[in-house]
Length: 117
Image (cartoon, rainbow, N blue to C red; front, side, top):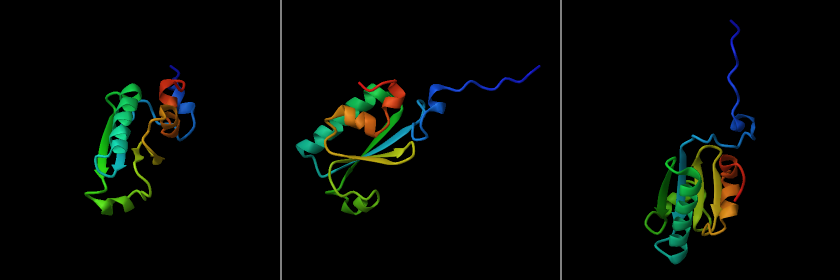
């Protein structure tokens, strides 16, 4: 019998930055207290994650008012900032994440959903 090569999924042929659909996503949101902009960023991030990554993501919120020393870890210079830790490569987006299309494109989520919304 001849051994068959496994079929390639759509994502195996995509760009190397494209995460696998089943990948665990680790996101870190840096904020400065419970400001309206920080709360908006968190709400927008949760909505986008539920739409594109339901059940496959973790969000860690880091309040730099309480832990300013952590800003250096991911080289944070503006707030709020979203950092995609996993899947690699690491990516950053600054702002309140209200432009969903920009977040989806910036985090490579369009590769998972087929096309940008």
